[in-house]
Length: 275
Image (cartoon, rainbow, N blue to C red; front, side, top):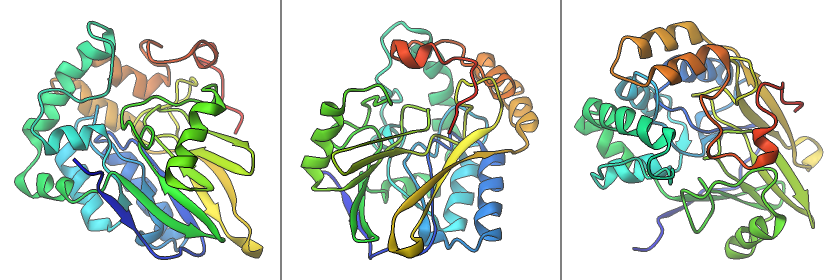
């Protein structure tokens, strides 16, 4: 099947980037409020995918996203939901704790989504391309060739470089791994804004997003933390048939496990990310 892509016109002014809403309605509500307070238009708000995920309000989250009018590509979760698949497609190791947890939250999300929400999910492209300050920018979920590929700060540059060559891009904006970072080499820029649906394993319930700026016609970026009503998010998860370990992570900012993480990122658990 050909990869569904979307091309949008040259973007100007601030661009808000975020990923992994994960059915966290409270975080999405707060991010939308910030965008509106800073006069960032919905067309300049871009999600790297996985609007649906671990938290308790998948239907409400998708409907708010539609109402907002922000842009998103499809994450692995959206692709699986679109195809009526039986699992989340996260590429977790079979039998791992993450795999076990996904057997709870994925069918829960699947059961809650309306026909309207599923129809919206089916409209999402797998990548998005735009021009910004004269640079070609591509938005992917995991990587351009593999939606479920985990790419981290410590992932070798050679792995990242393949994506720039495949897309003929200067900037790659990606999600999926759950951790915010930036990596620049060879006049290329890999940006991961992080996710707003779950903390970044740094010991704080705050979550992460990013803002691009085009002042003086030069691309700059800022990593930002997001405060939101995480107590309500966790309580709603505790009251649903969802992994209680994830409900605890919402409060503590510590992941239940580091199965998906390389050794470098695993060693950062509980430390505040210096971005």
